[in-house]
Image (cartoon, rainbow, N blue to C red; front, side, top):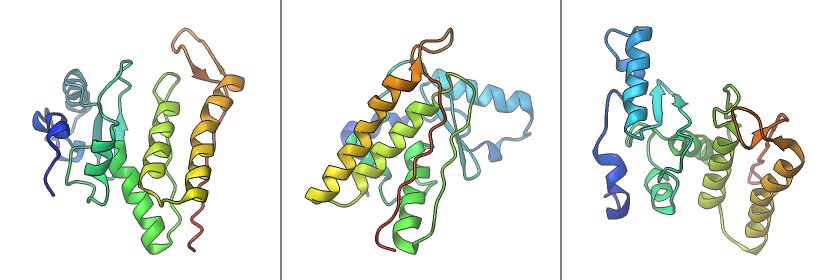
Length: 177
């Protein structure tokens, strides 16, 4: 599968080591330097084996387009640079193809981008899942629930203009089981 011309730029200039397991020697200093180098080149995702680490860029990044979703759709995790879409696609396919329950845990300190990561995951699942009037209606309701929850549970803090002040658990069930 060839990369779309419009998305090629984000994949061209890989900086550092995309999977920290491959760092040699694997020290705290080398790990932090690698994450920093990647971050400074807008490569906010790095793998540690089958885990993806994300560093909040605190600015808009062109990593969440329909073309990029298409690139990660039905691809093996390590075929393309680290991305939250790769983790999400693997979980989605395991759920869909093997009827295997999946869990994506998003963890981090205040301002780390957990809420945004959950939105990106839900957008990906909505984009790659089935079509149809009823399905599209449910997907739209699911995606539109975020602004409602944020209106009641988010506040401006010193570290984050839109900080979630609640725990969010999203459960998506595969009705094909």
